[in-house]
Image (cartoon, rainbow, N blue to C red; front, top):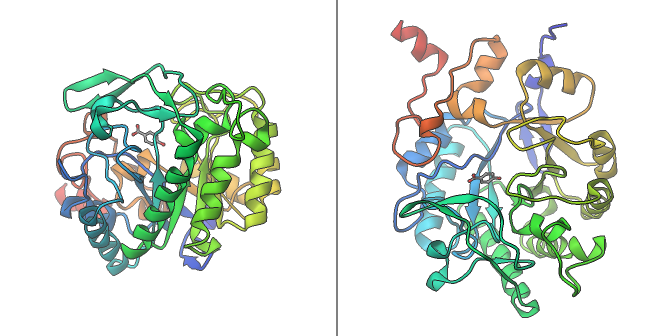
Length: 368
Ligand code: PHB
């Protein structure tokens, strides 16, 4: 039953990049940007550098504007200080022979007034509050009541994505991943549980995918299609979200994305960080509808990853939590070695502890 996982270690051409293996580091919020500027710092650069043996690194979700922020200490890509911090990160990764995309993020309604410009309300497609909490300067807080975006504000949001993509280019990223998953702004428009608009951005499937396609098209004016991917979570309820007919919506969306020739779709199969079989969904059909590279994510082990690649059900496998706790995950998977256990208490915020101090196999053996 146990496969030798050979295919995980074969190269893959993704857009313009030649990836040395099929192992991707999934985006992971770590909340260690510099307080006050939300710029990545030397510790952040060290963290990504340590993991540069991945076929591809995808940065933690990074807000495209202050309005796009939903948690304290997550990094942005809209100020000079943030661009400078990310430039140091991409240099560290490239010096270690790695490749890195940045995940572009607008949280929409998943925010708190204390994080918003002038203490205003977070924005979303409709004025529907999400059940949940975020983390603010004063600790955990209920998510704030959002207001519905005015039609006249939408071009400004698309413009913020374009500016962020330009900034990503300046900072030396190899590409960008559009975050259209996990209950954040773009998915709030896509799914009918959160989008009750009656204008051109709500109602029909065509209308609900309008914003994500406008964002994609606008980014494609500043970056070649081989440098643009997108993350989707068709059935995940993460951040209090749902859709009444996800297969219809996502097959349509992915056909549109395929026409645009994006480098990849990054698909969270099932419930984010939870059950893979949370709800039925035809991922194989979705992959076929796209045509380009299919990056699979959510709860993959070495064995499931090997089986999935061997059965030709995916091109790339993204690992989240295992990469967090194992800087040398690629080597550990290659050797079928045991993995470090992740420490939940240090996932978000803090310093090097639980961030850059997880040992590699060699370091662990040297310490024995
Ligand atoms: C989080 O910060 O908790 C977070 C961010 C992005 C995701 C999922 C979770 O896609």
